Length: 454
Image (cartoon, rainbow, N blue to C red; front, side, top):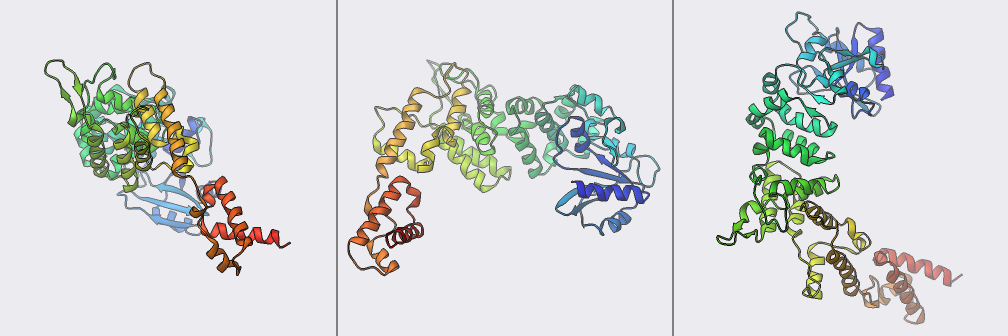
């Protein structure tokens, strides 16, 4: 960002404009973290004059915001620039103090002059520095008013806390709980984006549980909300369905498809739970099918990408495979390989195959002292490899080219030379099946002939 900052520093020095860093940049500077983006606020200078000045250096894009905001692009760099939001004071350009009152959280309501990069120059009206020190999230003004201005702020508070690993101030917590229904006034995409941040945080279970406690989860994913307190068979699960799902989310790597699949893998138990009237034994037959249907409904409602929906639905549907070495036939293993889309490339890294990662997360979230990977799972992976290799055992007839193709391509006559080329290509493909491609094999044949004719 050095070039674009130089331009803004020139604006600050050569005009009456007062240019400041604001928001996340200042917050991350204090936290000694690299900022994801830079937000700038400029006061004491009309927006049209700012645009006129910056046009000589780059491209200006006006935004649809009700506030005076622009995006400035220069040599591949980009910053968001705004004028102070005007509060109650009479300053025609709006003061920083006015602007700070209308911001969401104290840690985002700090300012730093563009020509300064030291903590002592930070302008902090609402104790943002103190809240960063104590890792606490607070609103700037009245909580209800703050959320009324922008209802997504209630969910954003939880996502901020999850990303920063901060506590939410008790007043903010209860404020969110009393205004939870207002989240319905935010856009679907806003809700989805904040939910993604929570899911990809270091410990999503902590903050999904918080969503439940403040009531936001009911308006986001009511299907998961209803799983709270739903008991399972204690022999296999120490936790209720809700707790099991959010712990599974913790136990898989921070990949959106894996986290969503882990979160929803048992959500179908909501529809399939049955309890024996005498023994009290609880069953959830075919809950994986119900989970996949509910996953699709939830993800469509939250406007997720179709590719993500397809992959999550597939993983939730397949996660309940029950491999029994003595009962599974080779045909059953082959069907599993086909349904799970296991390819030759996956054989050397089955431990990181998405379906097996979700299964591992499911196992770790049971609350029982199990190993991460069961002995039967290890046997299953070996059998998959053996079955795949048997199924895909190569013969000369499987080559992507044959003698006729080679004769036409290289103007050869039928004879030993063609046979030698075929044998050479078969040896190459036997070692690396990826080479079994017409263009690749013709190129390999050309190299072979070049060596022979030397």
